[in-house]
Amino acid sequence: DAIDTVENETAAVQALNEGEPDTVVQALKKGDANVITGETEAYHASASSPDQADGILLSDKGRFGVDVSFYQGNIDWAKAKADGVTFAILRVGYGDDLKYQDDTKWERNAAACEKLGIPYGVYLYSYATNATMVKSEISHTLRLLKGHHISLPVFYDMEDNDQSVLSASALCNIANQYCAGIAAAGYKAGIYSSKSWWEGKLSRLAKDE
Image (cartoon, rainbow, N blue to C red):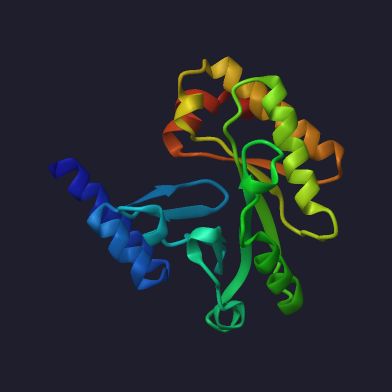
């Protein structure tokens, strides 16, 4: 509607003024992306099917990074670095500690970032709805991090439909359990989610810190 159009145009103009790539500006203008504000701004472009989706584009004080998974295929990381990518957030996998739920491009992406000196962090897409599942997701993440040296945080991606039926309190407990397990292993932990989930379901996490 008219309000959405105005918001889209405003976001696009802001992105343009801040020097964001044209792909980001156009996605915002068309309403195919949303903006999450905080210490960083994340522009998350959507697509009609997962294999068409672009990685999430991240901007932090003039630095440019990407958030990728196997959906992006075999990335030319040398070209990405030459094009200005200065950091990356790589998906390690999703759900329980099962090998078939490892991200099939995780090892390739991690090895390339390490070889080229691109700082990176990781994320795990969560399906957890109880403490037992969270424990398995912690194990899943830590198993895949063995032998790697990440310099950015481990993020817990909470946005699945199976979790949407849980109370805000239950979701915060899940988030805190995961982050505590990751922190206990010596990593910095964080939460990735949509703006609506953060404001409507996970805002208590900020008060728990």
